[in-house]
Image (cartoon, rainbow, N blue to C red; front, side, top):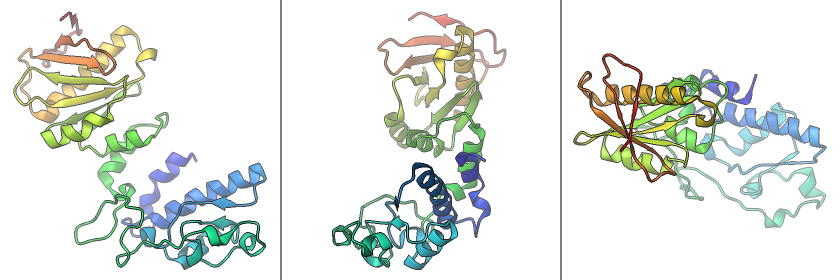
Length: 266
């Protein structure tokens, strides 16, 4: 099972709201395999005691569960943890490590942003059924980057087939969140109506034929119209451009008939 597929079932572990333990275990298992493959002596992580509700005892139990007892060093919280054999032997300098902890009484020492559940408590995106549904819809071949994850957090994020997806931002707040996520090869879509929605379209454009590219754009426009509640059949005009381009193109899309799309020069 691939790493991505393993993450997709993490919501079945525990109570489903804080699957940090299973997530950490999954990553440590993979790190342990890589350590053995490379012949490395130690695994070094950026974990902090208390982050995600995991105590020093919990972290030690995870190490033992994956066969890495005494072989994991956590420099950010090492002084809160028992010394490893490597530290005791002087192979690494424990005095240079930190004693950071994360908990309600200590705040967030690194200033990292965390989603909060109503009434307090950390929420993992992998426990959000809507986020998981959008993630599963991407399919196995998608490279899951931080940028991709941010796109999946939008409620109107839809796969279009052929490895393409569209994200629709309806109100000014969503549009402000979406704008920094455009990459140079993404397409920016909007329509000539007041308070137009904004859509980001991402696809493997180089591997698509001209006809397939237009089909993706049509599908994105239809998704955008549905999300925004725009009337169909009015022959409204779509504006679009690649982020790296300065030229804006126009496209007429009668949504009811869905005919072959035609590029209209500006």
